[in-house]
Length: 272
Image (cartoon, rainbow, N blue to C red; front, side, top):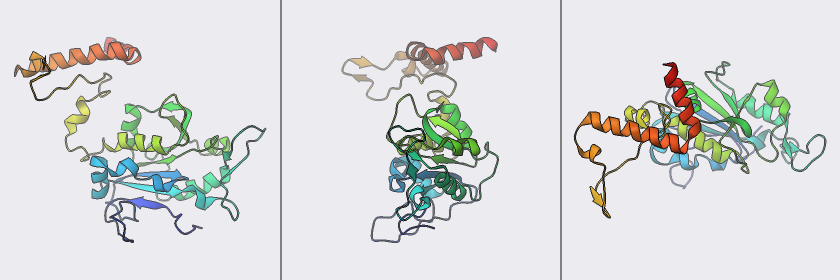
């Protein structure tokens, strides 16, 4: 079914170098049993791992703490030219990804995955979808993995989204040329929550959105920089005062910059 160079590309531990190129995280791995997996259906598998191969996410990928598979949509296309799209029904500009083509890609992406969508969400990246947030990242991290369809052109035939109850998710209120960058952002936000990736579980507990608030300001050496001093509370050595200051600053910044988050935070705490 696959054309040369169009096969699904996997990323993770025990990768095998098959060319004179530098070691590639994307060559057909045998990942650690039970590792969290991201399967991305895309017209541009060469876009992966991209930034996911760098820093802590890249190190965790190489260690097998999670795995990435880029599945080339083109290999499931129709005819000699592997067409994946067609004109919109009813007319209009642009092209639409075909339901039959996407279904064949989903069939491959679903191999070995549980049918329960809580254990393995199937997601289509779309500006009309539910906004991706930290809660979404937590739910994905708690699953066994996720399959992400990267849209292109005018989108995907609605029938395949309805047939498989695919969840539509948006990175934000703007339109991009495709879902690959959004997919990397969402996967990054999810992978950093996996055990062992950051190395310090407290980091994820203290950062923005962990308790519904934006994060407090951070400071480090030098103690005085261009006449500006680190707040005295942070250098007092009094842990209670430090926590009190950080909480107050998180609340102040959230109220000023994100009234929506602040209102939700107040509502939750008033019920408690």
